[in-house]
Length: 288
Image (cartoon, rainbow, N blue to C red; front, side):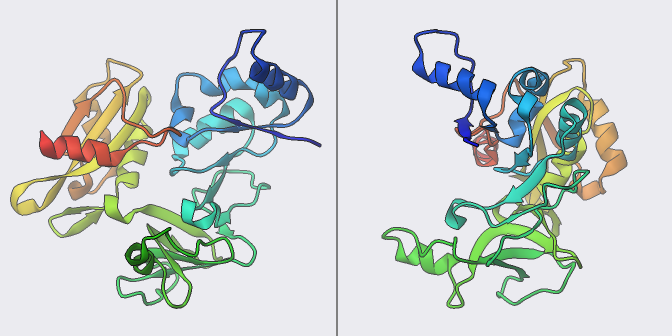
């Protein structure tokens, strides 16, 4: 059966629009793949609107592009009856390296198992393999891994080893069953008084608060402490206060992982596929 891929689908009302006609025809007759970053799924009732249209023929929703937060996955399942299958990859891996089984009955939070003919491992700063359960950088080797960056030999050598493994820059861990889990991006890790803080963990806690639409965490310079945690929040419920957020953080997070600053915003900066740009927030905070 034919399938149409819709990148960032938008409602098209004009009858003269040929793309709009094709979209409507595909929705009526064929399976349709819709592509969204996980952050866009937190928008106000996005799934209920889709359920009335595209989701009538839903099969296997797959999450990627950024970590799928558990609250987002649960909301999706409650509204559609389907479980988000989270996968993982990068542009350098063309672009998929691992994925969970589409037969899962609940969201696991892992990025699944390596694809066929693909090897993945966890290594330390010196490139040595780590044991099961130890946190380190994810390395990938397989036929989908790039040969190198075009005319950037130095950058290529920095990420591709002589053994053919690609350094992803992502921090992760592998369990005893061989399933991998993303902890966070290495470059986004925050160093607070010698302790590592991973933004994803803090964001997951804040995102679980009813009325929070989106959030992002970055590290900011703070004297002898090295860095401190700063939280950016977009509220769906404008009555939510900083005190309410900190009450949850104090209960769920170790003290050095708790935000020292909270900034409320109407929107967060994103790239063209909806991924929140922590780098922009970090640069704005440092320059300010």
